[in-house]
Amino acid sequence: MATELKTFIGSQFINKPVLADIEFIPHLEKINDFAANNGLKIYVTSSARPWDVPVVGPAFPAAKMSNHFIGHAIDMNIKIGGKLYTSHELGDFNSLPSTIQAFFTAIRNHPVLHWGGDFGDPVHIDDRLNKNDPNTWKQKLSIIQSELTGLTQPGIRAVNSPRLLFLTTPLMEGNDVKAVQEKLIGKGFNLGITSADGLFGPATSQAVAKFQEQAGLDPIDGMVGDKTRQALGL
Image (cartoon, rainbow, N blue to C red; front, side, top):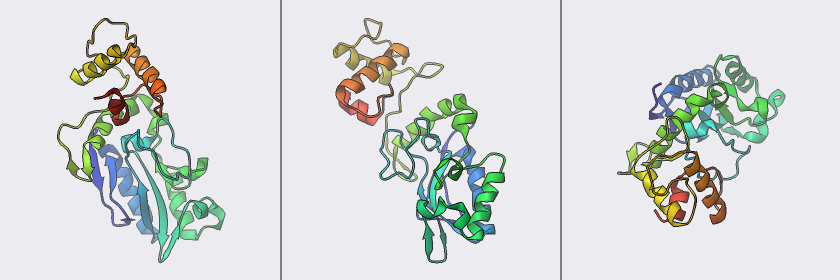
């Protein structure tokens, strides 16, 4: 499994660069080909994004296991000439210009790609990795999120940026886990251990979720990202 955050720039992609997992890049190239064949531009609004950053004005509620979190999805509008087609227009497939219909039909006919218009989110395209291979999705999550956390802007990485901590197999371990555990123990949460062991196991995840609930954080998911770290005083 190759996992690495990359910046994709295609001839038909406009507005902003696409941040994506290296394994999703070939699919972006195919999307670019479909767009070129139909003379339209992909106006990118979102690609890989941190799991704990709220999306402003989403056309469709974000999934808990969104493929955006691992760089396997884009949200977009479509531009033809001077007209920009947004979620309102894209949601009415039968009223779309034939070139946009042909573009989405090509996405639908692709063996891997999936158009969100088939489930009410017409600005979304992904590869359904979260549904087809949730174990791989989970393995990619910590890697991509760690790289996203370190980005100050596309291609520029901050030094010593913290990784996203969550329950997975094998267990995540390290001094960053130990620091979280020490804070939780100090606040009176039961981790099933008397001192921090540096292993992010089920008890640690449950304690994190309880802390998030008490602290009024959202989401309450047992994962430790920037907001939870700040609330813990790390």
